[in-house]
Amino acid sequence: MRSFDAIILGAGAAGMFCAIEAARRGRQVALVDHAKAPGEKIRISGGGRCNFTNLDIRPDRFLSRNPHFARSALSRYTQHDFIARIDAAGIGWHEKTLGQLFCNGSAREIIAMLVADMSAAGVALHLATQVGEISHGDGFRVSTSAGEMRAGKLVVATGGKSIPKMGATGFGYDIARRFRLAVTETRPALVPLTFGDAQLDEIRPLAGVALPAQVAAGGMAFREGLLFTHRGLSGPAILQISSYWREGMPINVDLLPGASVTEALAAAKGVGGRQAVAGALATSLPEKLARQIVARLGLRGNLADQSKAALAKLGAEVHDWQLRPVGTEGYRTAEVTLGGVDTDGLEARSMASRSLPGLHFIGEVVDVTGWLGGYNFQWAWSSGWVAGQAL
Image: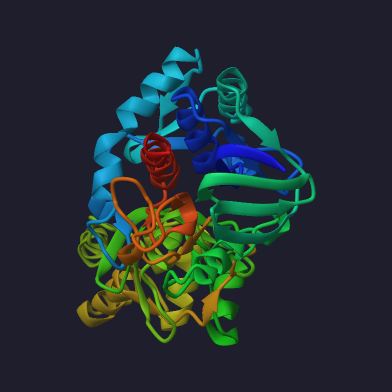
């Protein structure tokens, strides 16, 4: 049996960062993962360039049953701290929309940085290693395919259920329940929405059409990109609202936020009434979408033939298109898992269990879920860092 100061389960963003911090503080750390390579979610994120944080990190951009829980970790290890880490490693980056930061090159650069830091700090990395029974008595005992390990501290950084083809499971929740910690409802988040046959018949012919839009549901609204697909709706605005949407709830889509279609078409009617309605609408929206909206409303003739009421109805269809999703694409395409280990059972400053000292939960396995745009990676860095200081 090998003995360590801490065993960390899960070699993702949070687990690796925690391992580095603890090992740099002189702790003997074992990092265990069933995957063949570390940081697989880092590798595929951001189209392979890793949206590693956001310039505008705020606690109110994280969902949790306790909306204040994330504040401590996020304030103690900030986005600026991680940016400084990236800069020190010589990794180039750039800002995209809404404060999102991406690597100039490959996401593999971040993985390489973390692996190098673990090696330099002396972390014992065990990949392709299966975890069996976990028990607690005089410290924690973890049975693995590489042999039994023992440590005074155990950190669970196994992530959630999203993207099962990469090996994601609910293992971390099972560990929490094993040691009598509550787990909140879990569901796919940052995920495309799906629709019933009637609305899908309208959406499917528009597959590939993308435009800026505002999507609202559950008291929240996001103004970002919207994408029509063969399976339903996707794009950043849809992924964002999926975290707030619930079954049976409608979503309201404004296809041209910040403008008035009714006013624009009325003005166009005054100077060019012979123009086709769809053609006039296509000056503001993608042509295929404009033609479908006009056809759906049964509007015939030119702009000059349309009454004020008809133009108002067209405006309502553009600015308040109501749809009722029947579900999501599920964990298969979800970027993260909403819900997780209940924060009521954890200490915010150390991510440790209140009821069992030495047991910590970090990253996605915890009931803290960020918006799209680098927020979830920052939660991984921040929660991993604070746990690393406590080991």
